[in-house]
Length: 297
Image (cartoon, rainbow, N blue to C red):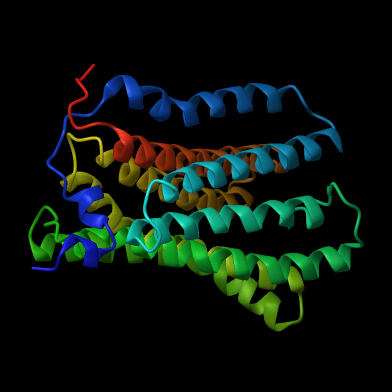
């Protein structure tokens, strides 16, 4: 049996006796991403002209990435230096933090709007360098959360066959949704297009993170009924939002969806993903800080 201090404190955070969910503490955390999404949709529907619409999307995405960073940082700060989950949440915080200056300095691949004016060529190069740096900690941090159950000695639900089937399904879905755009962006990158490099990095990072949804989801199921299920459930929802985001980009042109509608839906899903990351971090923080004797609401 591996001692808890050898697991980096993860046993304290995951293997603690299951406690009923603290509804009064977690209700607003769970509702926040969807409330933000409703407000976003109402506001964007009132802004129909450029460049005002482009600036709205840019400012909105900076806000949600800042929230994602704040949530992950709040979770990481609840653990001791060197703890397994401190490193995992710290890496997710790093991902959000690096993406913020990318948007401020170089804008988005799908928009020419920027808060600081660089030439389009400089902006493309900047995005191509920053996005791989940002996606590396995302992949590693998500992987660490995905294997937290193993580090903690937790038993996942279902048989080995069922768990492998869930993982295989996640791989197949990721391949079907991300395969075509990854191929197109790989060709663009090989032809010397910097934005092809940026998009390829983003899509590969999202695909690898989605594949890890299987153990993250199963961890949430194993912890169901307790406060520790909330962080893993929120990360599961985040990865689903990224999957739908990539699917929207892939399917919208074939369905004839207008550029405005496509961008609005993509930004809605991206905002939900970062807000769910924010909620996951706050839920982890609240779960660790909550006294064992705190009564259920």
